[in-house]
Image (cartoon, rainbow over all chains, first blue to last red; front, side, top):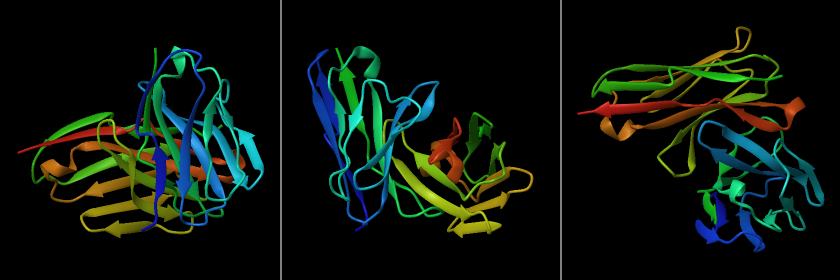
Length: 112
Length: 112
């Protein structure tokens, strides 16, 4: 089954404690991206990757890092989380331009 | 700058009604438009993808149309059911922006 898998689904952490949210897709997609969703602000792109070892900033990259060492995986790293990073996070993947985007089930992150 | 607007923001209807949800975008240079469904606090489920060269797509009780020149898409839901209650999001993919740009969504409630 074609899918994008995020882990964990729920995470509560404390300010400053480094964390990683994993994302994996099984569709051999070149393009992967991360979004955050906040009430009143909608979905905003954090980072994206066009292929292995190619990443670029989206609209709200501050406080986040990503890496793309393998085609299937695109982890999101918060080196020093802060309460304003409390949000619902989504990973997405797609193949070349013009194809359907698939989303993971989301990660609900709370930073206290 | 690409902006996506969805009207109405919220809709409450009795079961059985036929519905039209609207989506408009400001830059007609898109590769595709995708409609999603999101249940509260959950992930995004892809409903329909319309390529820029297509006029409509159908899946079951759902029909989506695209008029690229006027920057509009509609999602038609036939014979609505309580299980259709969710937020519906439209998103456009433009190569120049390297991301999906989402509307704020239409929150639909179908009551028995």
